[in-house]
Length: 626
Image 1: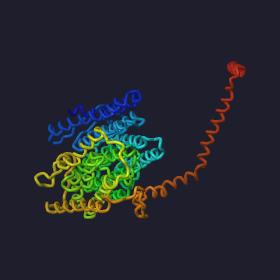
Image 2: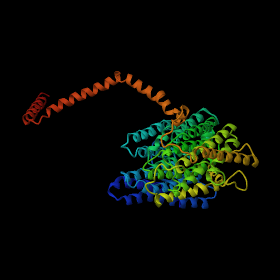
Image 3: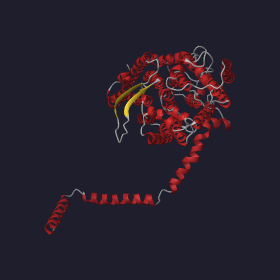
Image 4: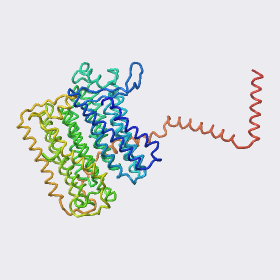
């Protein structure tokens, strides 16, 4: 089965190519079958390869497949080659399986939209590039996938391009992530300069022998790679693009937030964990950034009225938890939360998309209400996703994934009481804004009537994702009552075991109880404030502090006043300097010659004959006298 690995990547690319070239000439049903089918077949092949990998390879030995040599210049010869291990297998499973469910949901959701084939072409391309990113065996191929998902995010965020606001959101996402990408490219140049290769495994094996822990070059390289991860995963201070990315159709939001782009930064840090372990100050910075981000985004989510923006800020916050785990060396906890987060966040986005669609594109939660009886399937699946996001104890997968991170934030040898308290505060805020969203949307007085009920193709993905959001956590139950879990054992074939400084089951049980009480307290407070309360349909009046959180802590205003406006001001001053005048002069001269030549083309035959005669006389004269 491993020899079929290339098909997992090739099928989405092939689907995208077919739809791009022939999409306008084939029926919508055929378009949907190609778009959904290509990713679904990839998911099926992935399941066979995954089962074969687990049963025939108990030691977790990586599978390597080289298709062809890409470049061969002066000994630099990266290939189109794939590397499958426990980390990349986890990501491939989420990308293909969750991606297939999102594609299935997209078919009826986008059925009446203009550009139906274009939409699925972009979606297939998105899946293909993300698979390329996580399976690449060298940094050059990884970077191709990295920039590919950036391109697809631009195309899909601005899918409804006739609205200028959507085009602005797409450009903003593309521009902000370029900041991190630039840092990442510089980091890759440093790696190539030192090791004369971009093969990931070769670099990770050589780095501990050539760079000492805490060395300047290791710290510099790790910081640069971290810059790329921050941009793609929308962490502070480059998180501002993700809330505006809600301009995309809801299935796109689900794909970006759950299975593709924003998780790329988590993958990059996990994949290059050796480099971050050689730079302890950078790894600590990863945890600090994650802790700050989960509070910043959580407080912003608490004051949104757009249901999709609540979920957008929630994604930023949950990725923050993953960064905390990566920063304290809890590698398996970070990847486990990545997987569970993909289940419940895609469920929540698809559920929100269903609500928005049946309410005639209404996004404001204060204009909803009373939907739990009118949309029972959407309500119950959405509620399961909300419980998982809030990490309600024992009954949801989110409890097992988030609780492990909160515990390791304290118990790991790189953890601290500050990170633990921050994680608990984030859990309280998460439960509060999540059930605020549930109570405003589904309970209280109905302010709008659903135009229809979603069909089976839109409901089935919700049911499957709801089941995974409930049952997926059980693979993280402790093995023989020890600290090593089933998922951890699988991941530790590739990533190192988390070093836990604080031992003792009693301490862990106490920490779990505290985390559970904190989440329940957030739910209880949301119930007291928002359940069946008569909120007006109009957007609520906000105090200055509420407006501050609503506007994402004014990061956009800070960047506008501190970076954009000064650059625009200097550009205007420098508009007609000597360099500009030089090139303007060249353009003027070219224009002058153009007008002169154009004047000779007047359509009068006698002028052409005279010009031909003069040319002949000059030519003969030159020949005679030379």
